[in-house]
Length: 431
Image 1 (cartoon, one colour):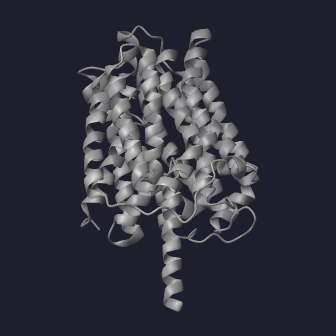
Image 2 (cartoon, one colour):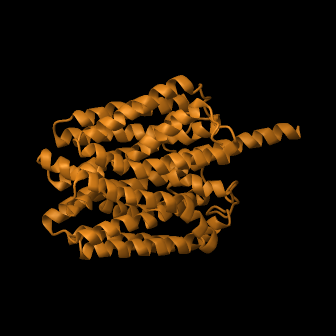
Image 3 (tube, one colour):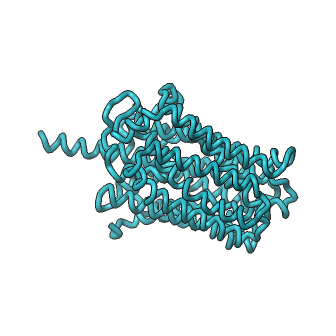
């Protein structure tokens, strides 16, 4: 499995750096606020611009990659990340960083939309081996991102931005030289396909539930660093612990819990536990020990929820998986993008307890919305979409694991490509 072409390792390395971006900025948020004389709500716009642009870009990433091919889309995304991460590090105002972070989000959406598909098509050892490589890359990225942000942020808040730019430049050069040209898909994807897909009740319900869940998630991720009042390196260590739990429970915990208890019961318990965790933060937001322990523990629920909700969406939706993933991602990341900024404003107008109390309630709303699709989730465990049709590959262990990192539709497209390739081989063999 580890004896792979250079192209696979080039893209896998880029995946590590890409997923670092999720928690990279957490350790430097207080430093940016202090040195650029910005309020916490202004600084949280780093999350808002990144995620909102990413959400909107999701509607078009499949349309782009289906017309120009995976390699060109991948390289385009890498170029944007290199440029905008460096510009963010060079910015002299909070407005500049926020704007350049938006460009970074666009590049990341283009990159992740095709990264797993490229790894699957280039890797030796089959689909399962490619999924394990991808899981390893994104698990390392999510866990190491905050730690790297803390280490470089202890030197300067500009350090993490420059660090990502340099690492992505290395990945870009390796991808250009080592990755062979990739063929275009058989047919282009319509730009409006993700919006039309939301007409399906199951997909819309899952998306709305994820919107409320992501509101809770990114309230914690985007605002919890401020009341901790820790140095950049210590904040990096806290969110490193959080990232470890996210990765472990997403890759290993979620599939096992799903097999034992089913998707719906596991999600209800995970969301309820997350609500309790956020309620604890809301009650004691200035108790540093409680806050740190609650944030790290939240990684368990977040890892479980991220994997199982995305995997369920891929099964229940009666449209192509990349389209379903784009539609779902668009809805959920709107909530994630708006939450940190709203948290800052709520603290300014009320107090520190309010945003986390609302986040706890938001997690419960997500669970309530999911309960309205209980039968649909049960059918998903049986490998059927919301219309009762059997879904190819829904019973494969790799499907659940691969959806962990499918924030932008990459895993969905890779799974579909893999299945179509096997269908063509089987068809040729039967002839």
